[in-house]
Image (cartoon, rainbow, N blue to C red; front, side, top):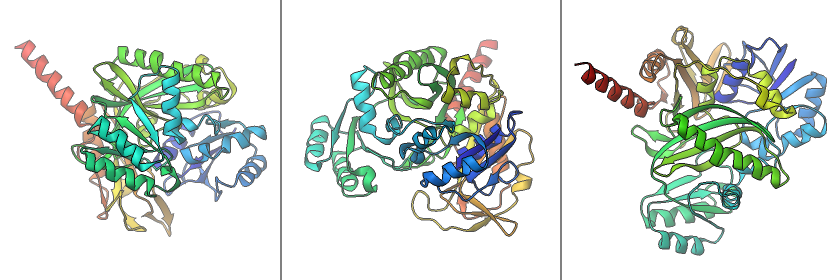
Length: 435
């Protein structure tokens, strides 16, 4: 079969890499792809917002499956249009994609179906929002309601910071995404991500991961689209995973179906593991980035039947096998990110850096020009490695990263720090027990 992958990031490179391993696949097209996908897929100049053009391309190339990577085309209704033309697509309808496209929509759904999440309020009036914040106190979380490329969440440590965030968001900092905002109680615990495929009725649990959202080491500085991730997340024990499925994922499946808009695609649940158990921070309706990269590295099974089953049904009958060993991914970003940064800087020595069999370099914001790889985005490369432990995967990823010649880029040097600390503590305990 021929497959079209929509998107240009590291997530899409990882999906293309995994899809390319399927014996079911004849050809892969990437729209638009990036500088790293050329050996696996044919990049095509196709505007995902031009639904007519996407439909025409699929008909001309006999596309059997469209995999929509980013959230914006999903919220924009691309899958609805493809469905109307009987073109099989992986991803939710526009209405179901509101689980990511509107934080207020998700909070209201949680309230209606008793899904554990932080207490909240929805506001489009700054004075009312500030009054709510003043009554609740700080720290408190201020979120733009709509899509803001992973940057529309502000954790305010003081009331002044919260009031400023309200003014910024409602004042246009995130454009139309901030026409409304959500104010949330600050949850205390450890964050984790859980992924499950859904066909509207049943689910296929996938795996867990932990992202590193903030730009600075020690989880400091502003939020980003993600500076690195690892899988599995140790905090997601078997019991915590069971509770996440029973208390969060399945009630969402039932709730969306009851509302007349069954969810088909991937649930990406951002969780806070609190003293009460798992609580939903937010839903994303596509694979995470960079979480997808570590999931694809650990996935042993053919992904294509699972993606097809999301669209056509029977996802619970698909079996998925995983490497038990952890994977870790480090993001290299352009200096200045998540603020302004220079584009079209050259990246060297990528071939040498990617020599290790346990390491892969997924491209994100890159393009190939005149035989060179140039950085074109904020998050540019995802150096991803497998290891017998998170610590070993971390060592392998940074060893590869340190061979890359790109003075205009930077990374966090502590990706996986929680898991590595746990591993060291467990090792100490074992040594003490053996003495």
